[in-house]
Image (cartoon, rainbow, N blue to C red; front, side, top):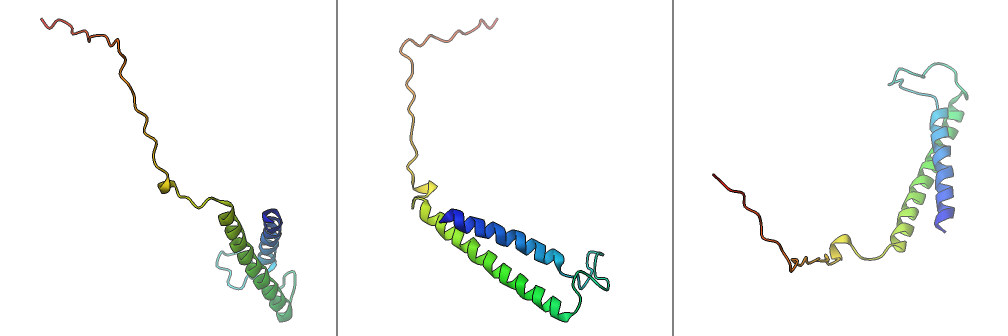
Length: 105
């Protein structure tokens, strides 16, 4: 199930990027585009591109939420903070040598 939703999500993502790049720039805020003419001319083409982009964006959000729900269902209900830390006790060796103190003359 997750693989199918992921493939649909990737197709929507690529399609959304392409649709945004096809649209004609209206403001030219980056200094590119915005000239007369383009791939599609006329208001009806812009309306159609806007509607398709909106549809793809809604599909993108729905598949994103769906993937999040699927991922949550597949994980355990525990948290990192719920796990008791394991304490490792270190024992001193029985034949511990005495420390050597140098002469201080």
